[in-house]
Length: 558
Image (cartoon, rainbow, N blue to C red; front, side):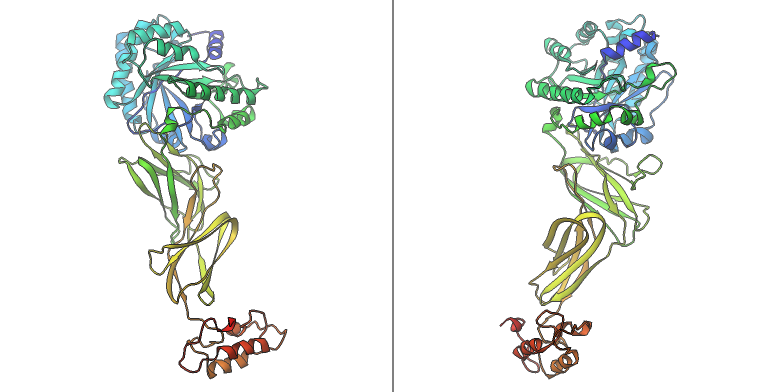
């Protein structure tokens, strides 16, 4: 077990984590991420962007992963898991004896089998040169056994050489393994691009696609007054490096070192501590968007996000499309309650497709929810992790004819959204009216409609802070309205303007400047002001057609 001073030195030198990729889990298109995940990290730290997260496990006691309690939720927030597999604590982090190596390898395979639907990148041990008696040859032997066991259950997993504080020992490990014996290197760094490891991989003829994974970078909490500028510079430098050479830095996971260096404190990343200290700087860094890895060239992209709102209020089917066949999952919780106690989710799909539909169930009516759809594909950057607001039904709307061939559709939302009405003479709809204004009370007027029955539904979506990201539209059930043959002066709505209509007009006559508010007299206000007077009567006379003869709908404009 190294002394505290050595541990401090190791932290300052920074560490590299390696993980194998499964055939089913996508990877983040961004390099940035965090060391250890906690609920809400995608919003509180990652600014809604997908990223990486390092998870650690010690296997000597035989514990298995809590997949549903920690791993699936992290993936649902859009994170790519980089799983570190250790044997024991820092002094025993990689087994020395052949018996322990065999047991370690077996358990690595068991962990991969349990995690292969949510993780495909693994790193084997950490700060290995702190283990007494460890040599590159001993590590290479144990690493090969662990890698073989993982790839036996997850053939396309990426298994990375764990972090050593001595780069020359890493080179000896790489040479012992040979180009086909490893899938990447793990590094720790304060805040600099690992040029030495990138060059080493080129010098040792590493396979194309084998790169460096930074699993820890950063500084002790509240000790860097230039945190924001340092973070921005670091990510920009990684982006420049990745753009200039084939050998890539695939991730850089920020480790805000809290006071755990002092005895008795926990060794866990803390969102609370991150918010207290350097979190604003990190959020600014994640927003740069220039430090992409090679997966950014092949992203999974979501379009057509729809949340159908049934009147029952107990379910919401959610559908979307992807540009490539991908897997899918859905997470949801009442607004303001995101956390393991309240979240519900669907299992990851076992099949890939481009058309996706999953259902939020066991909902309370008229309740606002946050929903997060997710799609992943092997060797593509993942899509999802953003939370959208939706509200369970009933969601009412009204469509009222407000003139010849004209209908006004109104509805309301609990937060500002845009306005869309889809309508048509059949349930296939086919026509659209819309307004981009973000409002709570919605009103759209549709004109020039022939007489007959129509079908319609309303849609609304709130703005997506990511201007390049898709919106999710809430969509009402299909409802109906009718367009009658409205003719100025046809107060009995029988198509003609005759003596019967004249009698109704007389009953509505109010005189100049006297408002006529009776709903039955709306059709008598032919000149569109509030009274029924001699001006309206003149227009009425111009529309007279006689019994049984349909009047001209445009008679009042001639």
